[in-house]
Image (cartoon, rainbow over all chains, first blue to last red):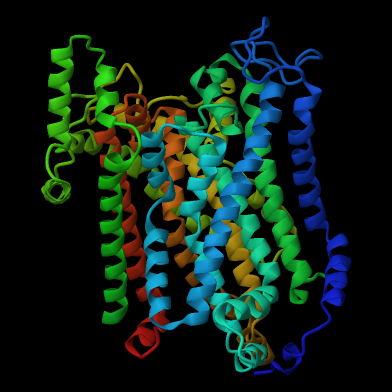
Length: 294
Length: 331
């Protein structure tokens, strides 16, 4: 093994500066970031731009996009732009909550299983595999149908609780390869405890990987949430992009030719998730010199 | 070999056990009373009738017995293939309702999964060595994987169905027809099947293509490829080896993706009002038919488990390392 160079820790500030250098020059990362940021800003400030409440019935039903209604109105006269910007908020909330919870559980399980090994690893691994095989949406369907109370945050919580297994598996594999390195041995010999070694030695060395895992989990949460909303298990209060799609489908926007009802929400979900994926590829290139195109 | 399958079977057995237990636990420990909501839905005002219904539903669920024997009964009924009675289509047994829907879902899922996997891998492999193709496959692939299944379905229904009018946008067959065996009916089935199939196929395609492209590039840069080309081996041969090695993770990926793909099929069915399990779930939720919902849940879990097991067998057949490694000490 040629781990001598890696064993010498490099100055963190220098690493960060180098990453930033390549990050700014990476087209994929920048494009993805700009798209996500633009939609995030629209979600944050859009509701301030439009006075209309998202679910308020207006006097002009079924009107196509115009100056008065930027994205037109629904069959009931609701302003679609207002629904859209509020829906963006829910989408980001679901992504952050779902992706965040899944990332935290995945990290804890992955680190502990990978670092401690032995029987603990066997048990955690078994648990991960079991949950990995159960189709997530089917579980969420059952839980959501019975629970009935559904805010965006609760939805995110349950998505997070079912989505962590593959992250745990990936992090376990990474930890496995790190735990035999010299600097980890050194820390162990100097008497550091498990938690300290994981937090100080192992996690920082795969921080870029952890960040990318979170991004993928974020995207996955957004997609799962939109499916749930579409089946009719969306938040009971408020709006979401998936809920807009469900309403459009339910009230035959398709047959009525009201494309402005179902195109924007789907396009926004696709844009957010797609931009995240592309940014992730960009990040990979930033952190992994082998992948950089010259 | 035996150890490999032993492990896998243990995991599948445990998974099924967990799924069944969750399925049993949720209606019993969740806040809210499913029996009460079912009684409320029936809209009966006389107190005696309400009490009678409550007793009836309680005995259907077996809620009047101690918890442990409820759990035992649940398993017993399940192993006898008894999923309970549908409330929405009372008094049809749930297993019968599901049985009528399953062929449609299978006809949609199996071809779209297999075809998208094969075609996606081909595309990805080609993209890995043609810059021009790479520049189109990659962005299109990312857009496709990022799309929610139902949105692509809605767009296809709108463009090819409503505007162009080529394909019907709802149902498994024309309303004017009754299911029977004839060419006219089969053609009609196929006609209705095309759009849902296409939307499932397209969304899955992008992911496989991107995965394969990345794997092939990785394999082509590995030591054995460099060595082979240094030996003067023809590019075709190197690529063939690279493809073989790159396909293995894709098989694992197929197993991991199965649950997601099935979920996608459910949502797509709802868009097209296709008479499969997805539409059934929607009806079950709208009618608060929890027996039906639980039945479909178990059915989906079982389906995914069986499919996973088949993939495991295929994996062993295709990958010599698993065969060799599992015979030895490696876990």
